[in-house]
Structure formats: structure tokens, C-alpha cells
Amino acid sequence: MGGIEVKPERTDPRITRTVVALQQAIVDLASQRPVSQITVANLADLAGVTRATFYNRYDSPLELLLDVLNADLDHGLRLKEARRADGRHTAEQVLRLTISDVADHAERFSAVYRHALYDPADGGVYEEIGRAHV
Image 1 (cartoon, rainbow, N blue to C red):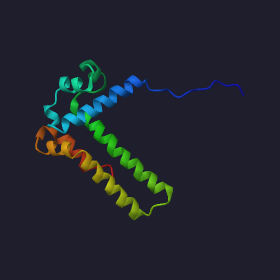
Image 2 (image 1 turned 45 degrees about the vertical axis):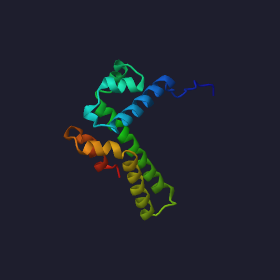
Image 3 (image 1 turned 30 degrees about the vertical axis):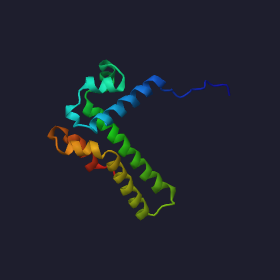
Image 4 (image 1 turned 90 degrees about the vertical axis):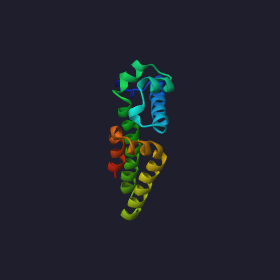
């Protein structure tokens, strides 16, 4: 039947590049110093965007960093659920692989968490690893 074909919306590549640039910039900066010491101007400059572009998406550098950390941890959660559903892994294997995924996250973002440990204003960052989405 000749119905109307609905195509899924595509994200503008410029938006994707902007988001990726902001995500990389916040991880780079938060690896060097506590997120509470990162200004939007520093972040926007490193990402190559305007402050207005940053504020169109986020309220603060902390919000952006938590989004990055959560997205990475959520990816691990999706892997865990896929492993459970595929039937090829025992419960013990799923648990072992999930712990490995969380450890990998902690290692990749160790500098970010290290800075957050010593700055009371960055408590929200360290809480993310505690929640671990396991």
C-alpha cells in the first residue's frame, strides 16, 4: 500500500561535533583539576564553541561531566543487560564482566575521580562511581 514513509530524524552532524567536543573538553579539563574550578569560558574555549552554545545544552560544567560519566556507566549497564538476555553467559560471568566494565570506567576516568575526591564541591562526581549503575 502506498503510505507515507516516515524517516527517522537525523541529528545534524554539527550538533554531534559540538556535543563530542564539549564532552572531550570537560574530561580533559576535569582530569587536570576539580570540576568546581573549571569555568564555562575555559570549557567553551577548549571545545571551540561559544559560551552561549554551552548554555544552550548545560547549566554547568558539573552537569556536563555527570552526563559524560553517566553515559559511560549506562553503556556498561546496557552491556550487562545484553549479556543476560543473550543466554550465552552464566550469572557469574555476567557479574564478573560487569565488575570489569565498572573497573574499566574507573580506570579511564581515574584522574577525574581523583580530583573530585579532594574537593568537597565535586561530591556529585565521586557519587557517580558509587552508584555504578550495576
